[in-house]
Length: 330
Image 1 (cartoon, rainbow, N blue to C red):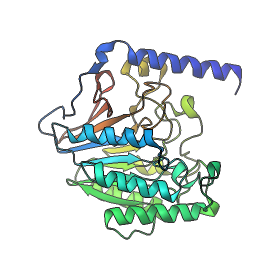
Image 2: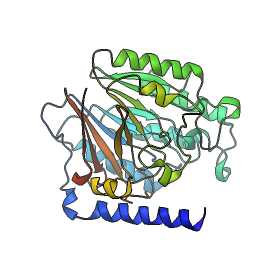
Image 3: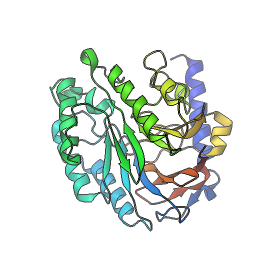
Image 4: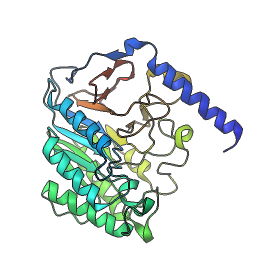
C-alpha cells in the first residue's frame, strides 16, 4: 500500500467515524421495536461473529444480543447471522454456535457461511480438516438445525410470505482463503428464485457474506474483497428484477451516518440500478470506517410499500437514528 493510498483510507476512516458519532442526537434510547405498527416482517441482522471454541467474550456478546432481542416490544420473525460464524472453521466452535442459538435466540436463525467458516480452516493450527470437510460440516449442522436435507451451500426460505435466498461458497478446485467460489447451478438457482419471489411485486432478500465490488465503499474499505462482475454474474442477475435486496457482511465496516456517506462516499446501504445493497458491520470484533463498537447490526422491517433498515447495537439496545434508510418498493 502506497503512502497516498494509506492517507486516503486514514482520512476516510476518521471522517466517517466522526460524522457518525456527531451529533450525539443520532443515538436513540434503548428498546427494540418497529418504527410503524403495520410491519409485515421483522428481522434482526448481524454478521461476522467470529466465535472461537470456549471464547467467553464473543459468545457473551451473542448472549447479550439475544437477551436484548428477547425484550423487544415487537415480535421478531427471524434472526439473520450473515457469515463468519466461526473464526477458524473448526467443528467444535460450529457445534457450540448451534447450541448457543438453540438455547438463546428468540426466533429462528438464518445462518450464512463466510470465508472464515470454510476458507480459513487450518488457521493458527486450530484444525487440520480440508475446506471440503469444513463445507460438509457446515451444511450438516445447518441441516440438523433446520430439519432439512440440503446437499449444497445455498437454499431459500420463506418468512411470512417473503423469500430469503442464502448463497455460499462451494469450494471449487480447493476453494480460496477469502474469496467465494460458485457453480453455474448456484447462479441458475439464484435467477429462478428471484423470478419466483418477485413475481407478485414483493421484495426478495439475498443473503451472502461477500459484498459486490464497488458497492457501499468496498473500494476504499477493502478493495477486491467483493464478488467481481468478471468472476460471477451475480450483479447482472440481481438487476433483472425489481425490489431485490442484497445483504452482505465481510468488510468489517461500521455503521455510517448519512452525513458520512455524503462527505466520504462510504455507506451502509445504497441503491444501484434498482438493487438495494446492505453491508452489515462486524458483530464480534472491532469495526472500521464508521462506528467501531462490537455488537452492532441492523433491524430489517418490511412493509407493504417500503423496507426500512435501522442500525442498532444489540448489546446496549441503542438505535443509530442518523443512519436509518427507508427504501420505497416499486
